[in-house]
Length: 109
Length: 117
Image (tube, rainbow over all chains, first blue to last red; front, side, top):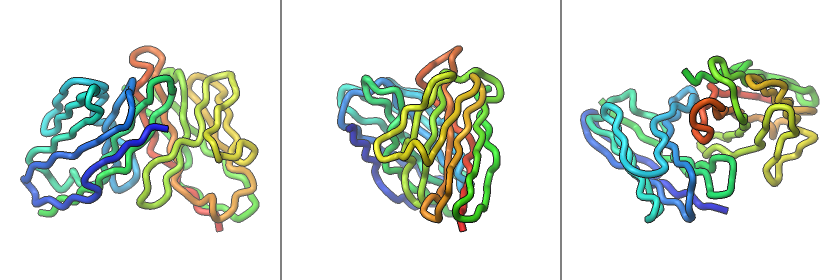
């Protein structure tokens, strides 16, 4: 099956700092989504981004499908950005998402 | 739009009993619904995929007789954990993909925390 690795596994930032989270996947994908899981467990859709670049406020994401990676950029981080960030991919020929290992972000004031 | 609800948000039950969890798409019709399980500090693992009116497709290692999935309509799927045991304690999350826009993007419910004593 497809492998999805995220780095770093843990990240501690001072409020206001910027960060880049990475997602590497081992095979071709139809779909890639980034999620933020808040401390209560709710998964929040950040981006649907099988290729290209998107921006939404302080967040942006880039997927280079040919090189099998995606990046999530967080600028001017806030304490409310804390939580776990997951990327998830849909393998070509599959009909479901496979989740990566996650990056646990802690933003300290 | 694209809101998915789950009920209950948490449940405690005794070993040997059954528990039903509901997943509803509130403002759209779901092409497909998915059930995931998440253990503490781990990633989400897909349990099964269900389409309205047809039998669910279970992932390898998931017991279909233990985790009964019913997808009765385009807005409702249920997961019943039968004869629950302490090792079934986990966070169960459903998701849905919508029929009318992008069939690939999934929207997630808030999850149900199950504790079996």
